[in-house]
Length: 102
Image (cartoon, rainbow, N blue to C red):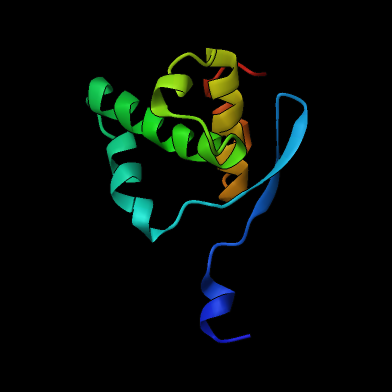
């Protein structure tokens, strides 16, 4: 194992719609997208959130296109947001509250 290996994002097990999947946490490559997701402009933030959750969805359903993803229900998107938070070691309690999951 090289020094670099210990810093690379490792897949984490998450649960979406009752099934378990291994997903890769976000990386430095997604920092611009993460920054846009925190924008005060709701249109910019929602587009970035869509792209971020699509990254997780694409790991679960590799053959999915963005057009396929746009047909996915909001309940699934909420679960993808929770999966993304868990994969990245975020405190999920605040996210659960914001998404109305508690």
